[in-house]
Image (cartoon, rainbow, N blue to C red; front, top):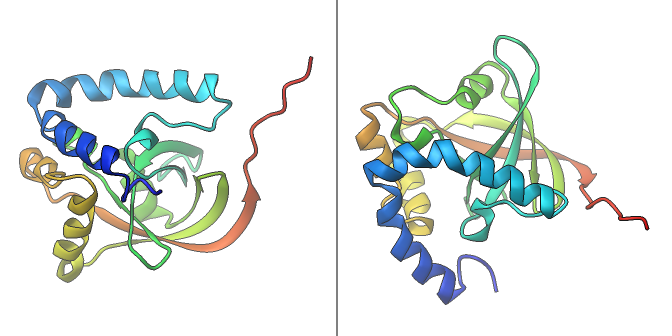
Length: 177
């Protein structure tokens, strides 16, 4: 059973989604979720993401727009039904676009790690005429997610990540005694 068809996950999403749009969560989320993400990934040998418990999640590896250093960002994604991923630069409804969106605009060739697979991807900004369809698909996964765009006062950047090459599997480290 997938995340999208599991009835318990759907009920939890419907219950939690409104809470994630509150002012308290928008303040608390960016301050606490990265810490919980690091802890859970550490104790699970990099195999579990906090967000991955309820939504499709990936790690984006993008080249810094100014520094050219590789940056890792944990993101929720929505499958587009054609083997590609839609990611939204909501940044908890902050006024500024998140750094990873600038990185993809400057360097659209990136990599993702998703469900143990390491893939090269080509990122493209979703055109205005396709934004509503993308938001509809995203909100079918996480109800009300577009509210972040309205609350931020900016047009959230939506990207389509198209896999171009398989780079292998990311296996958990083996424990030795």
